[in-house]
Image (cartoon, rainbow, N blue to C red; front, side):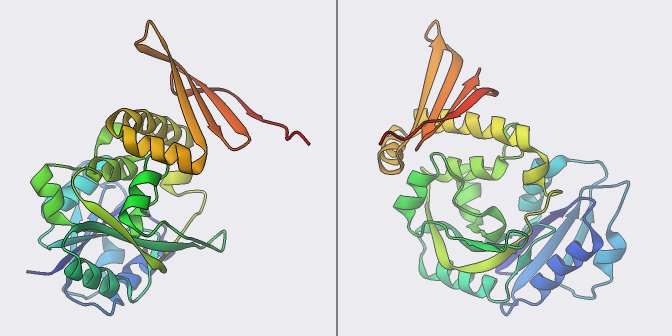
Length: 283
């Protein structure tokens, strides 16, 4: 049985991006893994590209019908044989030492269920530094996704034991919701090194699903406020960020007002942006 299952869904991926992603996994210094590549585009297969790599660790599977990103991620979990699940996106690049460092950390810290890392944005040419320790990560998760999903490695037993999976309702922010679901059942850690190059191009899921992403994120924030009130208050206090919900009949969310620094944004029914203003500074 492999120690690690690498889970990578693909969908109409650009050839050069897919090859770079696959080769970055096959070039890992840590070698005890299976590499499950799930093709979610039956009508436009990438089979020829994947099978051109003659590596016995690759398991190529093609969905008979399109499941979408959330369904594909959950199917990958069910297919995984490894103790640890290494998340990988089809257009990113894992640095050679990523798996070795993440496996070593999970082996040495049995109370940690998810380990991530800092990432480098390829197009913007900048590093994203994430909070390191569990308490800081959980506080920031109240309104920020501070575990970079494609850099993460998850202890599979934590998901199975608690029956926690990706939730289609929150797609394309299903990864952010997964972390929030895990807050009460495990601990997090971010290795303070760049272990993944993230391809922040216009065609990425994050950039091409802007409105859906915003709506899902707003809903997750509202749920975090109710489910984790202590963490929510700590985050608001430390980061000077406030969110207020005005409800009709004390039940129906009518207006959501978000203030961060000098910026105020107002949404109707949690989702529809009404306006955004920047406060002037008095001198």
